[in-house]
Length: 167
Image 1 (spheres, helix red, strand yellow):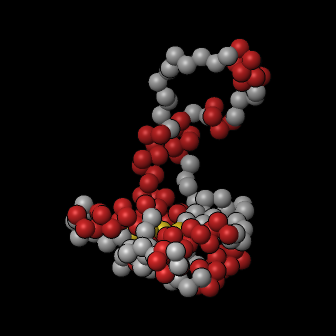
Image 2: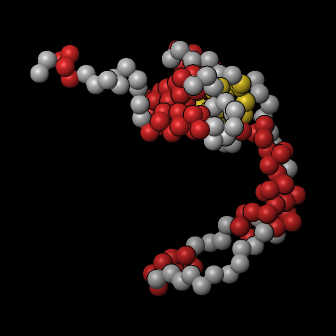
């Protein structure tokens, strides 16, 4: 067989499970006339690596393929390790790969709106019948309790979450 005979009729149309699922959802209008919306959520605590480049190409590429939008949303939830240098570098790398975001935002932008739901997650859990093997139980018992885990729920709920403002 020659190389030209090995081509399949669909060789011109790229396909993978993500592409196929999005195409099917759009074809059937599973979500009405919704436009595909993706996001690339890096943590600005270091430079990007090859895995990030792959994620950028998937997130931005699929949105572009289907006429959608992609947000660059920094996961700025660890301020001690985050620096503006990394934010700038990530933006530069996304552009270098040939993409432009539709909206620049930060995870902390959503903190005020997500805080009410946080109070539900801080309520004491119902006791369970889970038991641990003796060795693990001894190890757990030997650990000193975390101050964050033992403080009253009211104290935890009264803490204000600091937010960073977008650059």
